[in-house]
Amino acid sequence: MSTVIEEFHGQLEGSIAPARVASFLDGLSHADRVVAIRSLGRAHQKKLYEAADGFGPLALTDIVAPTVPAFQPVRHHGKNTLPVFTHFEKRFCRGSDADPAKPDELYGFNFQTMQPLTGPGYFVAVEDTNRREVLVDYNRLPDGDLAGWPDGWPEIRSNERGLSRFVYGFMIDTLRRVSEHVSIGSAARKGKDMGSWFILARED
Image (cartoon, rainbow, N blue to C red; front, side):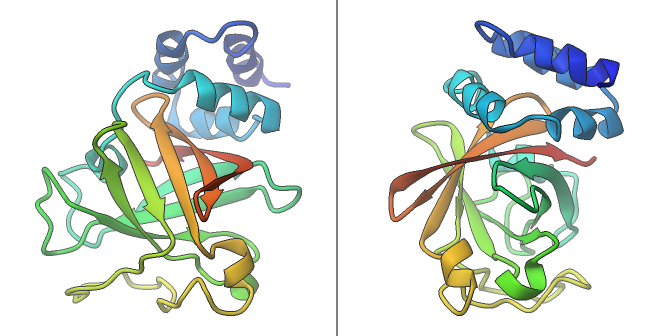
């Protein structure tokens, strides 16, 4: 086990101090940050998600910075708690008609190994201002003025068709802040928690 992983896991033993975890992650390079977050299994992710509750606000501008041009993809490298194909990415962008400093929504999809079978899992991300969290809503698809849509992104398709229905259908993820670059999420289907978590590291 690498030193980065050992140190990160040490931060998660006993009672978690969210500010200390954030400081540790902020001090890593992007590459080491991805190694660290992708080392976490189910128990650590669940514990960190619970510890992150109320720690700090997460806004859409933390997902896609105001300085990023419209429709320029921002990659968030992730690790989920599924039995297989645990490494994935959520890729986000901001529409051309959005205020870069205060967007109402972001667009995105899931990039992973089984994407050709499961579909891209498109979503619309919005802020939950009451909870200061971000909701990733698979019940909504990108719409509006999509001129300038990112090159290479897959065709937009419903999450209620084919295998997508069983992977992304009727789902909303809740994202919480862990650090400047890292967020952690929990999945719910039709409002019911699925007992499934994932952690993301934004690539600058």
